[in-house]
Image 1 (cartoon, rainbow, N blue to C red):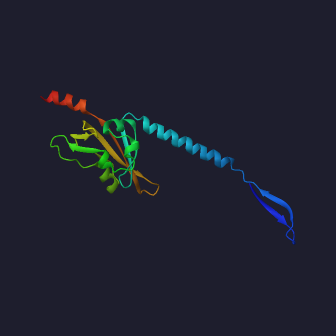
Image 2 (cartoon, one colour):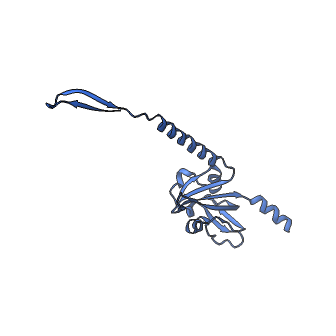
Image 3 (spheres, one colour):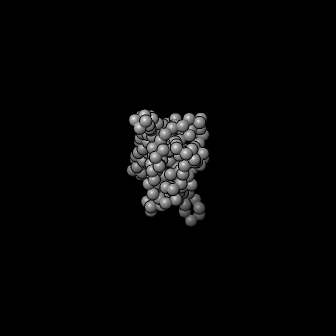
Amino acid sequence: VKYAPVKNELGEILGVIGVANDITERKKAESEIVKRQGLISATLLSIGEALISTDSKGNVTMMNPVAEKLTGWKLAECAGRNINEVFSIINAKSGDKADNPIERTLKEGLIVGLANHTKLISKDGIEYQIADSCAPIKGENGQVLGAVLVFRNVTEEYEQREKLII
């Protein structure tokens, strides 16, 4: 509500005019947006596979509990850090550093999968055989705003496969 005094020619206040805007619909819409954002966030945090998202520069913006467990990083300590610090991967056969799929996704705007035989090295030095895919997060105009990486621990599957081969 906004108020303005009404004055005569001598500057004397004769009264006050008030203007009110009904913002009920706007408040309902804002409440609905907040509720949807909460549901989306809860959904992403509840996914059974590890999930990490980054901004367009490759800095971590979100991580679910599964990703925290596998990487050894808590979101609170790695938010804003470059993905290469948090998601360290190597070729399981050679031990060489593997290309991070987020970098290619951000550069080319494409969905990228990891090569076979990729290991994640956690912050604590634990190694996990993983499978993943990375997709761009795009804005309305198609610009790449970031990337989302989804991966899972396939160590047991690889160990079983190796036993069958031997």
